[in-house]
Image 1 (tube, rainbow, N blue to C red):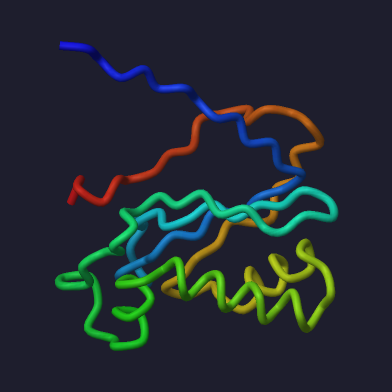
Image 2: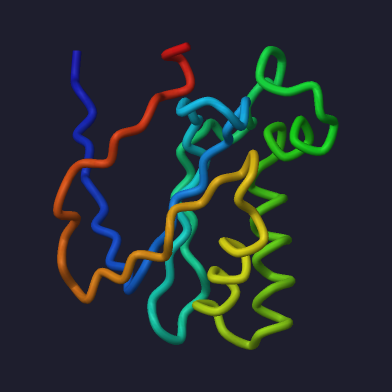
Length: 131
């Protein structure tokens, strides 16, 4: 039996934020959804941390708005970010607007500028199946 070789892809970003879904606002537990980054004069990059078919919202939220976001986070974030890019004319500013707008159930980390430096520490996340 032949094993598939995984060829890692290097992603080089100028800055990034990570968005997680926080089911209960008083909880420290969150489900990472997407890493959103950019490089100067390029479209935003999305590194999805959930399956393409989204996340089942049962047991996470009864709110229909967030249930819809979890079912199709790709469509939600692409549409929301495109709106902010159109308003601001800048991918960096659009990401900053997204961060400023969403800080309740959709919590985003501050925009981290990499300046060609690798991550200094591993990200601590809880994977969806770990509940």
